[in-house]
Amino acid sequence: MTIDQIIIKALEEDIRDGDHTSLATIPENSRGKAQLVFKQEGVLAGMEVAEKVFKTIDQNILFQAEKKDGETVNKGEIGFVVEGSKLSILSAERLALNFLQRMSGIATYTRFLVSKLQGLNTRLLDTRKTTPLLRELEKHAVKMGGGENHRMGLYDMIMIKDNHIDFAGGINNAIEKTKDYLKKNNKNLKIEIEVRNFDELREVLDSGGIDRIMLDNFTASDLKKAIREINGRYETEASGGITENTIRPYAESGVDFISVGALTHQIRSLDMSLLAIN
Image 1 (cartoon, helix red, strand yellow):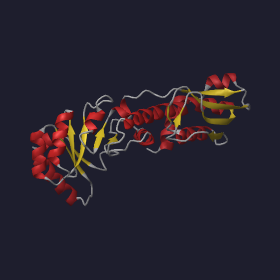
Image 2 (image 1 turned 180 degrees about the vertical axis):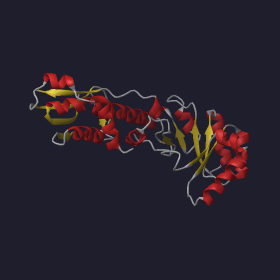
Image 3 (image 1 turned 30 degrees about the horizontal axis):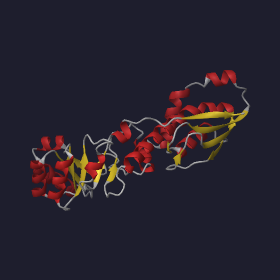
Image 4 (image 1 turned 135 degrees about the vertical axis):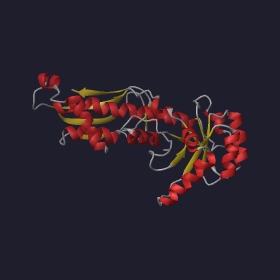
């Protein structure tokens, strides 16, 4: 589903047969102006989506952006100004804010975690733990916060996890079946495999034929030992239970990537309001 289709469906959900409060209280042809005001500091994401919401409601609305995605915003600053039909502005307001608040919350938390990695080579990744149908928007927000996107879905990378290994009958079987599948179907996809302990890690190192090893739920000290054992032969990723308080020690192990599901599924929206200008 495209962003335009998502917006249309979301507007249908919200408006249905009409914004009856606005229709009851606001003269049909009256025009007005409103501005987005930030109520706390954060990182902005979702401005283009917000503009699309207003333009979908009414192509004649004037939308003047004062800030750009990825910029740090402060309390009291103005994000954009809209001018046009008061009815159109009121009908678009909530959906535009919903997108902006959530996306900016993701970007803000991502920027915070990225700051914990300052001076190190480790890069921060998101996961597939996203809101259904909003993955593209939420992963865009991660990038605006300075993080990087892992795979977009099941289709653009091989990610052999514990259940795949167990169902396939072991690590070596899972890797060999994967290589056969890619060759048979003429697909050029990177292969990542998850390991849960040192025995599985050594089995992967013996098997080879992969691009990245995900070290799942290792302690920071064990992760450091594992990175030494891998010795640069493959890209490395740490995942599982890593928090803002522990991300720095994990990164100091020399791991290439740290993936954090909380970037997109445990977010506090950034506080902001659309206020009428009299």
